[in-house]
Image 1: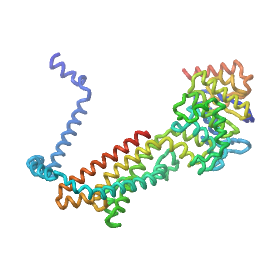
Image 2 (image 1 turned 60 degrees about the vertical axis):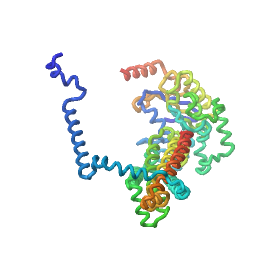
Image 3 (image 1 turned 135 degrees about the horizontal axis):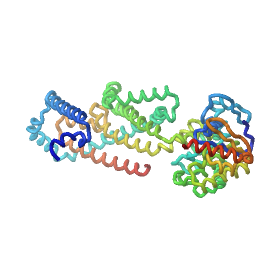
Length: 269
Length: 228
């Protein structure tokens, strides 16, 4: 085939129209330009990062060997962190059950209640947990109470969203059958909705618990108690070997928790 | 139109003829926009809340897709027929009276499915699931059974088996039964009385003996006409 022929039929051999190709290329170029613009504006220079590498490396080396003697001191705050996560997850699970039923159109036929609940839950979800924790710390003072409150509210929004969506996808014919026996609303929920969503519900609960363990750690940095608080202080005192010890404890704890919850999840789903 | 106590009525008609709407109006799964509908001398069109639930305990329903709660056991599905007679608290904690549990078990025995009592409902075959849903309806102690295309998802032998159970229950317990079907031959075999519907209108109403060659032909012609 000659080159001329090729050119004539070029729009046949291409999967996309030429105009679309041009548009997509233009968009890509714009995005790449935006990356470089952001890099130069924020002063993040990759070359500088490479030149700084020895300092970074030295800092990493200063974390080793971890200060094993510090581990016993990290256990109590770790337990506190897990307790915060357990309490917050329990509260949010309890509150999310009625909330998610009200926010599911298979159960709540009243449009106003449905929309209102959805809106409230959406607002709850947009507030970052660290902001909630900062507010509660300033209201209630330093300690675990603000941590629990912040995580409860944050995971309530998340859990209710996940659960209400799985309630919306259930088979409503099974609910019809239950209500055709003369059952009232609560009985329909208990006999028709609960069996259908229970596995997902348990799975979401465990997921939110794992999430809360990690989140309660970050919240410690703003004074909401737990292991985050001691990481913060050790970092400020430049005790990097202590920080490393805490991180190792944490890693082990997180792995154990996730293994247990994965085991539980496999049993129910 | 009046349906008498103890009758076995089959409603035939094409898809979209209004059979389901008709049958679902009787337990108010849908609400007719106009007219009057009496169940045991009570106009049911304006019933709400508690009265509506009382009506539904009297009117049992069997569905095309069985509509069992898939993840629950056969027994739990059957006992859910008692929900309308049981308080909310008792039903949540499974505190059913002993005679209710016995009744559910007896009804499972009547449709020969008692050996699967603790199996999950979705592990059963279609015919078995429909039998469980018959047991659920029986456990309800209904005055009237509505069956909305009960055999449309089943193969012919299983269909006959399900229809035979319905017929036997109708005769033995004197429960008025209204069934939707789209096979006229099956309707002829089991019904006491046939109601034909087309485009939302009743076009035939009479005992099986009155269904003549002519009406049959007409419905077949209509069926072909719709298919084309």
